[in-house]
Length: 212
Length: 164
Image (cartoon, rainbow over all chains, first blue to last red; front, side, top):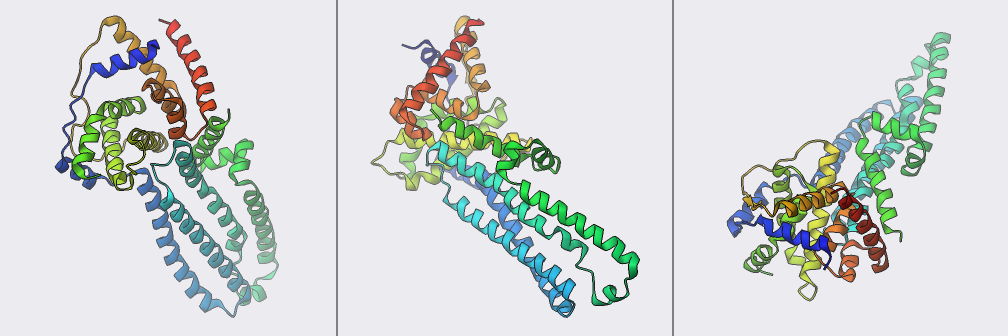
């Protein structure tokens, strides 16, 4: 017999098993169970949706007040749409989390988990679309009329610069680009999303593991 | 499966649960937490267990999936997650083996701990003498793939033992 299997058996003999498990202890384990991976993923999405709903209410109220001011209304309208899309993405992730079962095969389960962990990057990507509108949401009809050359000399370059940044980030913040482009990985890591790059790295490992 | 049957199955298979926990966590407290997590997830999933299917396949899938997820979560957060309580699920003692065997066991454990999460699972299933067909079913890859990967891992393992 394989010497390594013999060693593994010797290791088993070395352990003096003493699992004192009864129903009371099992129920105790259940009551202490609060931070499993799936629960943490679920909690993150639920918190995101709750905050999103509150933010959406504030945006809708603001939209109502500025509805007669086109630039402000369009800017806030974009915030509303982007927030709805982000909440929709979170909702879909909750559905996917609900479909994950540990009794499924390992490659499938781990691929789904890593997929959800990395999917936050897609939500972030959509969020960048609103970037230029952060420089326009306060531009009222009055400000446009009375702002004068200095206002426009600052406003136009800022909006253009933010548009360029938004387009570049929207095009590059994808799991596929992160695998290929070092600067995208560095940017994501630097903003505290290391878990995303690691999840994407793990998905690559799973892909290689599947290959014969 | 009722509670009593479940408890008996866990008792019958506690050895492998200890070994999986030991392979994915080096720290004793982490191992205990992982063991609790595995037992909890097994219990939670017990209702959906199809008695016409093999218990070991179901158990290995859950235990290894939980272990890999736990390991990755710890690694991501850089924090130890403590569930509290003191159920003392881990072995209370380890009886020393022969010095030569002891050293080889240590070397084997070291080799396992150096593998990535998926190879580690494959390695444990091989050492547990599961048939290739069952390993393939548990991992979700083909039998040919299992054979190829195991042959590579065994080659690396032999190299590792040459250091002895």
